[in-house]
Length: 124
Image (cartoon, rainbow, N blue to C red; front, top):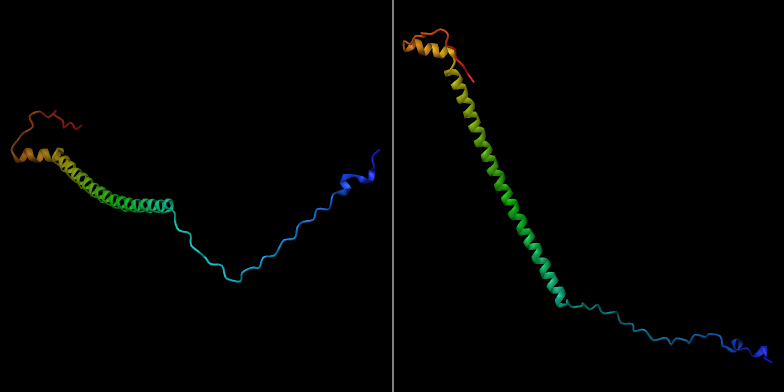
């Protein structure tokens, strides 16, 4: 027969944690040491710096070309305006020269006579 008093679970010792031995702490201040850059980090920094410089140069070149294009556009618009004003002036002059009163005055000046009174001035 089994003896219930000899149960193995009762024989287990309580879990006792071993005592930690205290190490004496050094009173010296910690020294901050810098970690050197790796070759990859140096390469990455150089590549990023080069990309930034290229982007800055591109931005300046783009701004300059935009300014030049705007000046050229202004020049073309000024020329277009001058040509339109010239066209309007010439149309007015053509209209004045082809008016019926001017044609009659010119006919009288050069002694021309209108033989047919049924002729009309037809404008498009």
